[in-house]
Image (cartoon, rainbow, N blue to C red):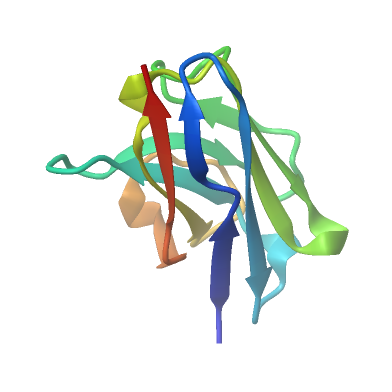
Length: 124
């Protein structure tokens, strides 16, 4: 049974940094792409970043490019999202997701398992 558990969210001020983690279990983590999505209150879920099975390939939403870094440690079955220069518009629930394949993808339909989310709130 696939399980994804996010952690690391919190309340920070604009310009601060946070690192989110996603602990995966129940499948061969190193075989699949992973991604972070977010959903702000009253808005649709949006893509943030994705990483391929080995970690060498990444892709970011324009809104976070240059500020956020996605990474993974396959021996630890863990996905990370390093967020720097946080802005109030980054406030959302952040979800990690397991890909259906090993390659990067920004479409949510390419992901078949989701965590419960972790809240990130950025005050101005």
